[in-house]
Length: 212
Image (cartoon, rainbow, N blue to C red; front, side):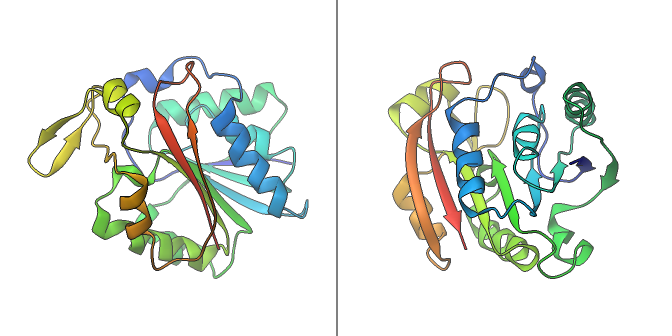
């Protein structure tokens, strides 16, 4: 098993994102649980926005290969250190998320996983990105924060034009489950679940979806 760390153009992280990686909590475990549900043990998995690499490391226990991506060099360095610590090999490539369907062949991956990625894009671009993902993988397992009283309080959101800016300075869209349903209406959503994020990560609500 090995991890290929790839620099992609997904999003820029705040410095807070590079604290010591937390243990696998509900959100991570839910991603892995769903990956295991559909995995065969011979899968090639793509994880976007790897951060500390904790999801990729967990995924390596059940997949044959895992490709972990992030734009920030600090995240890549941290993910590589963690991968090395847990006995995984790392390699760096450069890939643009918008070119994912050009970089990789049709059905290159068995599964794409990402947590905290889609909400950083405008509504009009998300369907396009998902279609690109579905060209290189028949399965997407994703999570993203949703609008709720807990989420609004946690992120201290404010408006800058048509953009929602959070307390960490990031452009992050907090939409309700109903709004996400509308955004994803053209796709085959086979599973969905709403959970409260673990306090060690943040006091906000998340939504998980499986798209096939």
